[in-house]
Image (cartoon, rainbow, N blue to C red):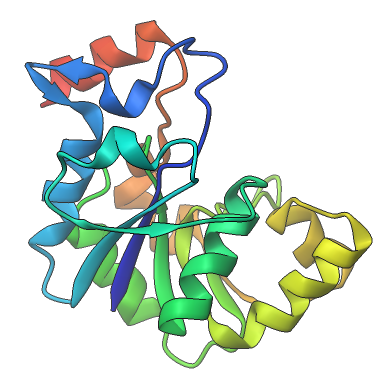
Amino acid sequence: MIIAILVGGTSTRFHINKLTYPVRGRPLINYIVENVRRCRSAVKVVLVATPQTVNQYRDIDVDVVIDFLAIGPMGGIYAVLKMFGEVMVLAGDMPFINCRYVEKMVELCKGYRYACLPMWIETGFLEPLAGIYSKEILPIIEQGLVLGELSIQRLIKKLNLGIKAIPIEIFLRDFVNMFMNINRFEDIEEVVYRT
């Protein structure tokens, strides 16, 4: 499995690039790269950056795929699928993702078609930046771009796309903390405390 970590965001709520912000002397992004690089299923780990952000990741020892669309996560997913065909997509600001989660998703996602995504049962909210995608979703993403729909979650729901949804509360309840995003300086304290 190719693991693609999206790092093209602008960190608007953080006011500086949160992924290069030092946590215990190392950039935050290093934690997720190191966590998933050790996974049995990880054939390759890549970062997906925009032309505007790519230079900020030159010191990280991992290949970088450039998302030339630079329209948010959908553009990053599109770029990496065009290159590799099947990928696990992870958000760069989810520092608690680990190999147990990666292996569990690989196991649970057998037999999917377009995408296999974690879903919160109570709300129906998908976690599109912690799932697995196949190249079969590329025409759907292209259709979304034509429609001006840049949210992968809304596109999947709008087109009633038959994705494989993994109920978090049932199958991934041991991994609930994996979905924590770093959005504010206060969130960094949680990372420092738990690393």
